[in-house]
Length: 507
Image 1: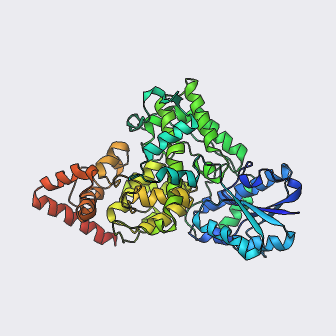
Image 2: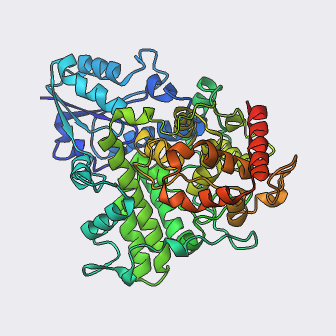
Image 3: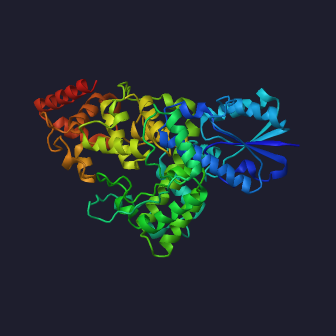
């Protein structure tokens, strides 16, 4: 009796739930490179290359472990181009008695899987994805009856559940959150570690050639491709982060420096989200560094909060909110995304840096995403669906379950405050405080109006003014609205005119 086990491109884990308890002698693992998954948004070339190469390496590892793997390549002339089409062809080849699959990470793909039993007339067993700590059902129970779904309280429950950084029933050090210690600007003369990088092997080189030929019109570069594409490589990247970057990660996790894309960040999210690293194992390794006295508490807690707090929380929001979450637009934003998001060509140095490195590396750290590219899109009133599709396309770690709540909820406030308690809007002063971008910019961050004024300054007040019907009652915005109301009317008019002139040129 043959069991068909489809393994998706973000399920590259040897301990995947669909494989558990299955006799390799009875199973055929199906892995599929399909056109639909590469073009439903215009994915960055390096993102496509990372996923395809990691899939091919994972298939080899499964074979070495004794599994029979049916692998369909993107350039196979008989490739149907869709996951469902390839499952149908595999059923014709192997005549399985049933299908076992791990729950997909995205609504779109899970809808396909849900239709397979009826479509193929076979039993389809869908197993939960227990690589995550909190299941969608457990999150729904946590959310039930709450007026506000704040991450901080969810995070505390995850700490209690996992025991990470706990001292009995109390948090290690007496505090749950050390975020106030993690907002230091960095200096260019500080030693900055280099994350783990790998030269492409023959498998990756073949994939890179395929991507260059087939996706020439997609954004981004692949000549600087250096991602690890195996579990072994991902573990080496984890080890490098723990030894070199984690000790100062906490202090400088919000900092930005021109020409320094990585700073003290882990650059491990592509491996976590593809399945090459286990999030709980990683967090326990971080905790062990703290227990051994090699990293301070604020660094360990800050990183663990990002993984078992924020990462688990946004996945919970994604499945709890449902597929229509992507269409929410609480601020009624409709402006097209500026063309420079796809080219990096702009006089605003902060955006040129953040977008430029994104196109070069398929990577930017969370503050660049939130407070540079996201902040600008929010201030100009960009269509949140367009913003969402850009983030989904350009980052190697972007899958809809993690990217959509981060973009629509936290960055663009399009869900009206379901996820974030206030919009993450800021003027140029924030960017100047947390980066060295402003020093080399053609605009002057101290200027509010005039031809050389930083656009973020007037756009910030324009954003608050035009959205007052929605945001005016938000208690976390009471102070900026009081500041606005205290301004002389002619100064208000000058700021609005400055912003509208910039927006007209942007259009």
